[in-house]
Image 1 (cartoon, rainbow, N blue to C red):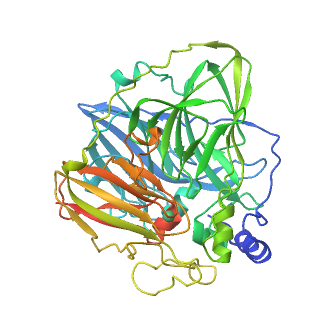
Image 2: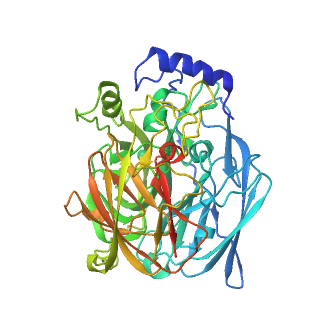
Image 3: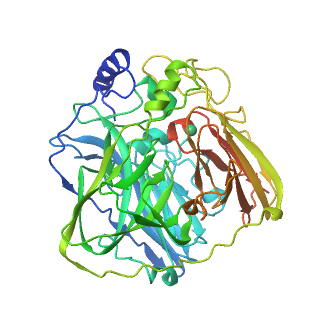
Length: 509
Ligand SMILES: [Cu+2]
């Protein structure tokens, strides 16, 4: 729970006295003490006949992120975040989720192609003290996925407090040639930014800016580790990276500017490794990278600040957007051992990706992402706006919308015929980037502003950055799971935007 006293204190100092990007109201901690990177435990489940069974408890706890301070958190089978679940391709999984949080929640399997009733979206609410059993077949390609709260109006807060974890889907044939020794040369990285009060409690959504651009913290946690240090012992290391932040996007790079290879995007392996110096990852997106190390090195994975210079929006908003990604962050310090083992060769070809042909599409839909200037009260005006800060006043700008509409639980925005292929045109008319996420599986990006996407965006995706002013087209097949009752979601993966209505729902029929 957020301490009310510190929250009020933070508001008093933070929003009135300072401009955006100044972090009064939270506190700067000495960077000196490094902590071993926490590796989330793996949960392989129990194989019972052909079904792999998992039991997940959503629970309250406390965590020690910062020196000498204790933070109230929530987690899955633990105090903060959850275990890394391991699924095999083509097996059945059964996930029993017990809600011991003391408040309603959901658990969404992000990136999975599964029946909408098993998706863990806003309609699969698990009431306080209740359990929910999700069952589905793992028909994904191997890759890095995740699970997190999708409770309507509460996703941001619950994920911020810790309700998220990684899922690894394995496929023996694909894995044989890549580093896959979990925690040794196959390293999970769940990157999150958080803001803390002086008493160690988490601060959430107590600045005006948060209600506009989403919750941006000033302190990085990786797998729940503050100021993390990783020691590597192999010459080639695979990192599975989830941007598990509520809103912040990163431009990941190494401080010595070394190049690395991206091998997978959201939905699995790329066709070939793509050499990069910087990897942009928006909230909800994943990437797997391979990095080469020499003996006895010390380097840092960082996020490089990218101040924007576009002019076209009214004063305050423009200033806010310009400074949004301006800050540099240290993400992870890495030391390599004096003797490095197992330097695997990197395969030139990782697989082949069937490109969905545009000609197969039988329908085109258009989605316009918009947000208001943020000065109007969301308050009680009409459907979909209903979230309030609770600390005085409605959320400003209760008008995060897709095609001018905000998410309403009992309104279905579209019906899609089973076994059809559709092209979705997505346009962002707002002054900031939104990561657009579609449930029910993986799509392909056709183009950005009419141009072919970068090589590392040519693989399977479920979340895609849509920059301000941009138009892009994605193509997706809707197979297997017709359901007249239960919709799938599409939404902005800035969780505060999603919670405030930048979401819609479709049926596959
Ligand atoms: Cu958004």
